[in-house]
Length: 280
Image (cartoon, rainbow, N blue to C red; front, side):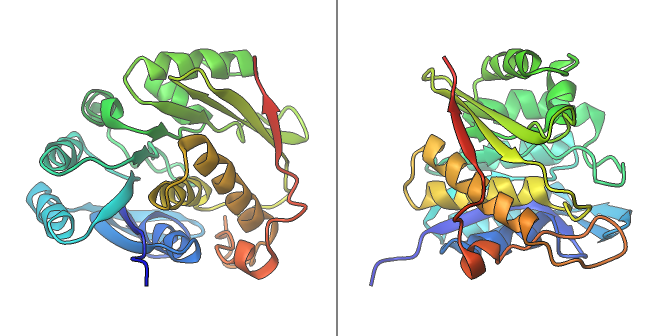
C-alpha cells in the first residue's frame, strides 16, 4: 500500500468550522491526504464574525512544528492566520531547520466581518521571512493591496501587483479577483517566475455563504502539491474544488455561511464553469 501524502496547515482555529484549521483539514481529507496542523491562534467565531482572538505563544507554535516535522513526512504545507510578527518569525526559523517542501501562503489579514487577523507590524515580517520561501502566494485583492501598497481595480493592476510580489521571492502568485465585482465573472490571475501566466474565470455565484473560501482554496493547492502535481496543475485543480464548494452551499448560520467541502466528492467537477484563459 502506497503511503498517503501528508499535508500541514499552520493557521488559526475557527470555532464555527468554516475557515482556518478546520476548513484546511476537511479539504486535506477530501483530497486524499493526511492533514496535520499547527495552531497559531484560537478564535471565538461563527458565521456572524470573529468575537475574540487568543494567539498561541511562540514557543508553543515552535514546539508543535518540531513535533510534526520530526515525525511526519510532510509533502506540502500552507500558512493561514499567523497573527503576529513573532509567530511569523518563529515559523520561518523553525521551517529552516527541516527539509524543504512546497509552502503555500494565504496571507490572511481580515475576517469576513472586518476583524483584523494580522497585525500591521506582521506584514513586513511576512514579506521578509516567509515570501522568499513560498511556492505559491494566494492573496485576494485587499490583501494584495496591503502587501504592495497599491490600489487594485483592473486586471492590469492585478498583474502589476503580482509582478511586484514576485520580487519578494515567491515562486508563483495567484491574485484572487473575487472582490472585483464589475463583471458577472470572478477572475483569478496566476503568474510564476518561470513566465507561466493564465486567468481562471468562473461565473459569479449569488450567495452569502463564502466563509473560508480563501483558506479552502489554499488548502486544496497544498493537497494537490503534496500529491505531486505541478504548481499550475495544483492551482487549476484547487479552483475546481473551491468553485464546487461555493456552488453547492449548505446554508448554515445567520451570516456568511461555510462552503461545502464535500461538493467535489458528492457531485464531481463536471460543468463547474472554470475557464482557463492563457495570457501572453
